[in-house]
Each structure stands twice: as C-alpha cells, then as structure tokens.
Image (cartoon, rainbow, N blue to C red):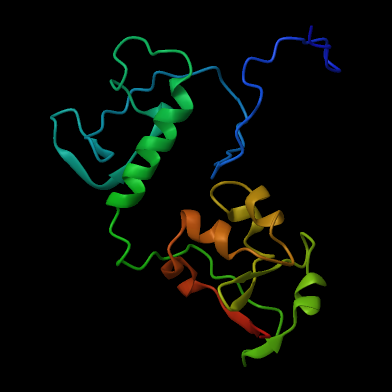
Amino acid sequence: TRTEDEFGKNNFPSVPFMDNGPYYVGKVTPVLHYCMGGIEIKEHGQVIDKNGNIIPGLYAAGEVTGGVHGKNRLGGNALTECVVFGRQVGMTIPLSKTVKLDKTVKSKTKTRISTISGGELLNHSSRADCWVQIQDLVYDLSNFIDEHPAGPEPILELCGMNGTEEFEEIHSIELLKGFEVIGRIAP
C-alpha cells in the first residue's frame, strides 16, 4: 500500500521517474481558456489576406490563428500549437534584416567600453538599474523594460545576470544593434 503525499494522493503511476533528460520547461499563464482565432496563415505562419494572398512581412502563430484545428481542437493542443507554429515562424523570418527599434536605449555611462566584473554586474539588478550580460557584452536595459513586447518579466528576471542563454533561445544577436553597449564582462 502506498502512503499518501501532502495532497492526499496515493496513486503515482509514473514512479519511479526516469531522470535521463534533457527536459524543457515553459511558464504557462492562462488568460483565456482558448480562442479559436481567425487569422488565416500558411504552413510557415505567413498571414494571408481575404483573397488568399500572403501579406509580406506579417506572421502569426498560436491562438490568433484559425483553421489549424477546424471547428474544435483536441484538449491540450493549445500550448503545442503555440510552440510549434511559433518555432516555425521564428525559423521562417529572415533574420539577416536589421530590426529597427522605436526607441534606442541610452546608457547611463560613458560611451567608451569598459571592463565590468561579475560583481559590478550584480550591483545593477533592479527595475531602475538593470544591466544584463549577453554574450561577453553588458547592456543597460532599464529604459526598455516596460517596452519589451513580451512584458517586463523576461528582462526583470535577468537584471544583474548573464542572460545569454535566455536571449539566444528567442532572439538573434542582430536585435541588439540598436542598444548601446556599456561594457565588456571581465574574463
């Protein structure tokens, strides 16, 4: 007989758990149960107009799109749809083009590139003073936090830290061309 856990459960069909990853985790925050969307897309996420023509430069993925599941979907497919089509769109968009930002983030420091220690980077870990290391360079993202398209949380979680891995999972390094480098991380 199995003993109950702290939640009163005593049936654990997946035990023992095999620890031979890798495992990928995503933060899911439901806002709406599911929206069957309505924007029609091609297989690589290009949005098409009412005449069936691709609208150049416009892509969509996830719940805003329609027709992927027909009139209904299988339960649990929403996150998979967002990830699969989001990845498909990300792989389709030509990253060789420079992305222009509406507002260039200005550094609070001098324009010459200085060497920044890991300890100095840690000292800039608040909303008002947020430095993030990406690759071997450090950027002051304080003025961009509230303008980040995915909201402030992704940047706030990286203030005072090396955000290279998180940044490169989603963005191309080309995106940072509009941001002023405030220093190079000390070796």
